[in-house]
Image 1 (cartoon, rainbow, N blue to C red):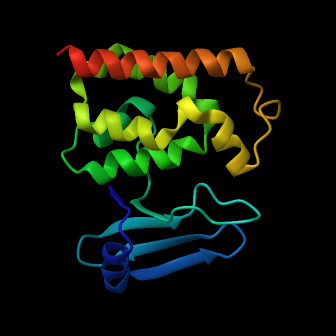
Image 2 (cartoon, helix red, strand yellow):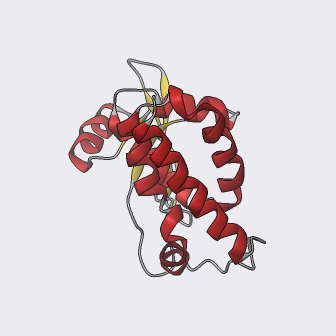
Image 3 (cartoon, rainbow, N blue to C red):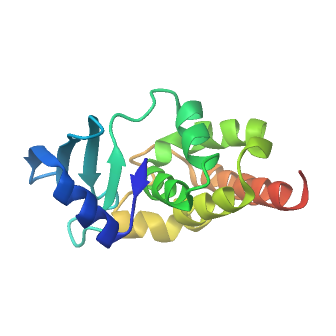
Length: 165
């Protein structure tokens, strides 16, 4: 689902046909002729000053957040957890729903995948992340107290997943 490594991205992109490119949003869409899959290349953490990490992933993603998490955090490929964390870090309005789902089903996700996902989600360092992305917490209508609670909840989930089965 996700390809993060630049060399792997270049190899895969050389096999695909570009369908369209948006130079304003830095998104590009590709078609892989042998697998018939659609791919999207983008920079989810791009801002006016820098682009952030480039992600290449299959497109479209599952409509339900639960399915998306299941696909990425149950897979042995650690790049899926990393890519999902990077992509969702730029979507803080989804964090509450995200943590609700993970709290209910944390046992079905791999320990390593969950650890890597939270590392790249950066919910516990949201202030740094918001500065990096030039996001004003007031714009996304999430209070600081709520963000602190979400950060604590993510730490509890990581602790539970590490120590419990």
